[in-house]
Image (cartoon, rainbow, N blue to C red):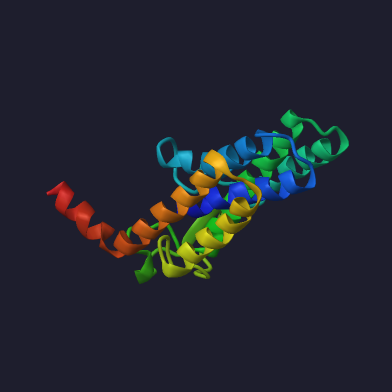
Length: 183
């Protein structure tokens, strides 16, 4: 779920900030990189257009090497963003397929691999978005953020946990809400 992706991106930023502080640069990179892949919900084909489980690691590696070699707020922002972007697709593979009722496992296709020319299958390590284990991951990745940051960044992590908790409570009812709304 989106809150999990957000806390993962912020957690990467927290690790980077612990090693070499560059102000808000890692935070901006982590937030943007973790959210951008899901923009294909609105433009293109979700989990295909902006998800790159293999090819996403090449720019992440290059950006990380550049940030290591020439550390600056811009290079760090790009490196954290690229790693969060690449990790997003991998995290989606760990979950369920793209379907309204993922607990029924009717669509095992998780993320399209452009390098392979095929879909990677869902692993169901996280049974579905909004499952208790998904919320647990959101909370687990929020902890380093709360350890390193305060202020509005900590509030974003807390908000992600709260939104994730509310979503976890209502997730299995979402298909019913959608059906009743379309009537």
